[in-house]
Image 1 (cartoon, rainbow, N blue to C red):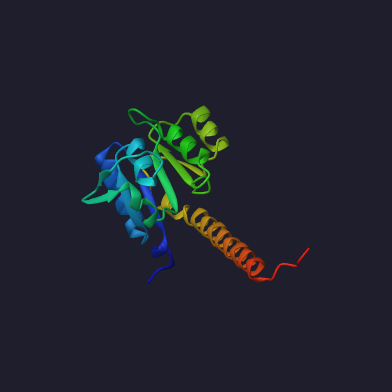
Image 2: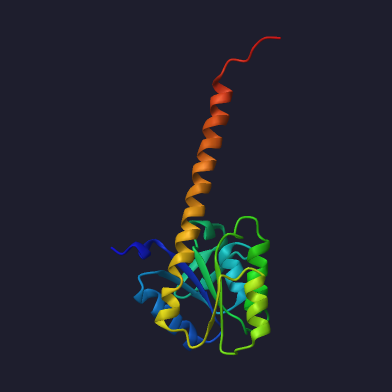
Amino acid sequence: MAAQAQFHVLAVDDSLIDRMLIERLLKTSSYHVTAVESGSKALKFLGLQEDSEMQVGTAIVSAENHQDLEVNLIITDYCMPEMTGYDLMRKIKESKSLRDIPVVIMSSENVPSRINRCLEEGAEEFFLKPVQQSDVNRLKPHLLRSKIKEEDQLINNKRKSMEESHCQDKPRPKI
């Protein structure tokens, strides 16, 4: 199985056609894809907004289980009603638990000031629509970097846990 198969991408776009296109391109590259139609649904899926349960594609995912589906990258449309892709990225980057997830923004509008602002504020990439397979190929380094950070964090957490349990096992000197 391809190495990319371990990566889960959350695709966010209010256009069904664009969502289907990005989903097909990502699946062609062996990524696991969850597609939602708005920034608020993305936040619910990620557990940043409370909701007892929400519809994701054909599966129902409860908010309590959002952490069971680890997201390695988020690709979002910039222009969406109620919340732009930029606003979604800002909320993700403000979250202590999610800020390291790479965010890629896509738009059909080539507005240099918008592109620069997104990149300066934390977007890894900015793709112009329609997204091409060559764009999807540019995601891999971001996913690999994300995976390395995640593995480092797990190692650090294990080390810290072992040190704490080691300290608790030692007999305390009497004073």
